Length: 318
Image (tube, rainbow, N blue to C red; front, side, top):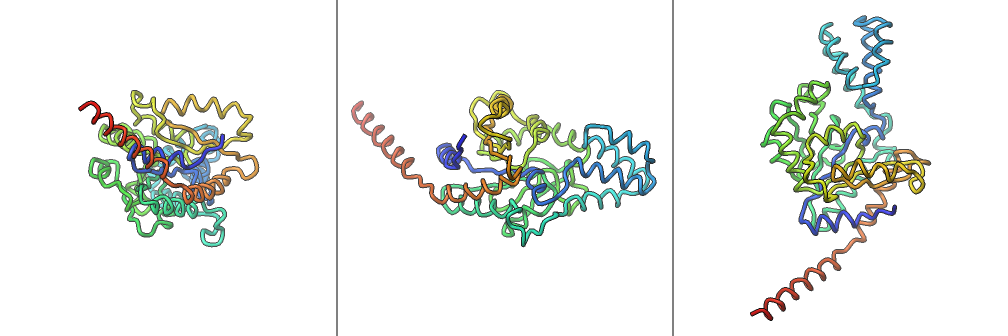
């Protein structure tokens, strides 16, 4: 499949919707930040080091095939041992990049993302909102003119969602500068995604925006699916980047469509055989050029023709 970014631009223009980009954990993992599985492993090691658990318990917990469950257990263990600060420290360490964001630009997805957003907005037809479920500053650092906006679970209400616009970066799961705002444990997720206000405003966001997901896993989509109205998924109004080995020959490329189409999302497959997930960086660079070359002339001519035809018909009817 040869996806061209003009598809997103034309759809957003036709439907008069802003483009909203969701950045998931996969974007930060590209620069070396740790994922949930690595964070869970490090928390268990730290718990043993602090003598909060023994090696047998560590072995038992390691066998659990659910990183969020392990992290939730560790949060309770650290709290019981009065080591909350060490728990927070592990989270902060997990958010540190392994690459130099200044010198290793080829590994930093946020650089081409910034250029892509600038290119889109420079066209004069679109606004681009940025929302992330990450806790770190790496996205925000590339958009210094945007303010960061985050909220605790208790304060996640209409006011928060009404502030969503193209002047800010919105942290849906909290920000590392405020540990109390972070959505980390299973309990935190359940509290947030079960809130009627949160679900209602997420549904409105899906209805009123054209959304592009970057760096999202199936686990994260399972959470987001709790906020999607199943009666409003017939039109494929959103997009997600999905990496595959052998895009053209993989049956999963087609099979995954059944899952994503049920969410109203059209997957954009890319080949990850040679560069793995870093192939997304090259793809964003291609999109930058595609946006630069895009012109709405055909759309404008269509609208003018449609308007003229309407006037003629109305004139005939009179």
